Image (cartoon, rainbow, N blue to C red):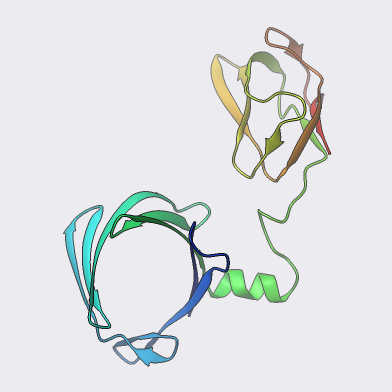
Length: 171
């Protein structure tokens, strides 16, 4: 079973659909899918469902956070998918990702700060690029693993840092 949350800018409440398979039949909210879906290319589809035609273009998708942005008949739609494991973790109170609040960002290894992408007071979200740490001749983009607001930045571009040194604090 899968749950798909669909939201667009024109509605305040997202819609949630439940997808499952019974035998060889696709079910949407326990009703058989009676539509027709045609793949036009890797990012373009055409769907006929409930007597309506939908032109679907995949604008972007992320397998990491199981989300996609679609353009359906000219309207931008954001989708988020939860599979059985995600639903089980949520039921057990072990949500991942978006609920996590950051406190500090520490250097995962010694290196040189090459660039800083955020400023103090700026809001950050899951997956945002925070800074670039060069270590062993490789550029490592450190990303946010939660959300929050940058309280203070403890380093500047050009600084050499040690492993576990605090680079940013969040509130």
